[in-house]
Image 1 (cartoon, rainbow, N blue to C red):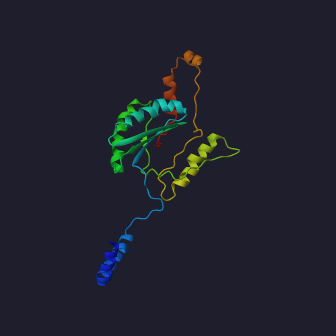
Image 2 (image 1 turned 180 degrees about the vertical axis):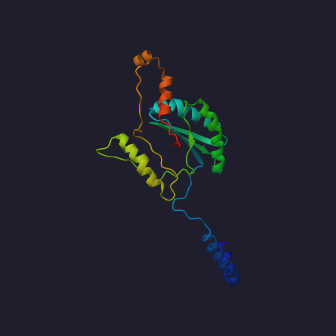
Image 3 (image 1 turned 30 degrees about the horizontal axis):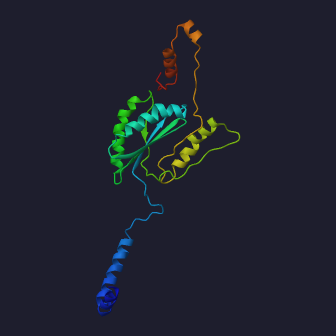
Length: 220
């Protein structure tokens, strides 16, 4: 068969040259329009559900946040795999969809089920969708260390300086902070003095809330 093809090409040189020219032009045309990527995105379509639960241990987050969200995401249409991860103060749920699923359709479906699943979470806990990025979007991980700073100071440095500096970089969708201690103020109530004064915990809570409110100035 190869011998016959060679003999035919030798006797029809003009047709072979014309076909070669057309093939070359078609190759050049296609080459100029093929999208090039140094790291091709071959990952699955996935949506990340991020939940911040400050000050809670991984086991508590697993029982109260990660497990309820994971079971709810199993019912999302076209979802293939659901993975949940619990860390100190934060929960991640990855919903992986079938091949060919549109990412924006997947995000809208996850958001629908997320609204209903939020009712079973602890009060004040609001899960949110991760950035609009692919499975290879997590490209860099870093840690802040210091000999003179404690974990609370390092977390404040991350939240108020490093995070905003990196967010300006081109192509960065989100900077996720994990670990450390978030600065907070604690009010320790004395039950005996509260009982003597006739004050309840609700009154203390309302007083703290009202003292932390900003009001606009007025004209005298």
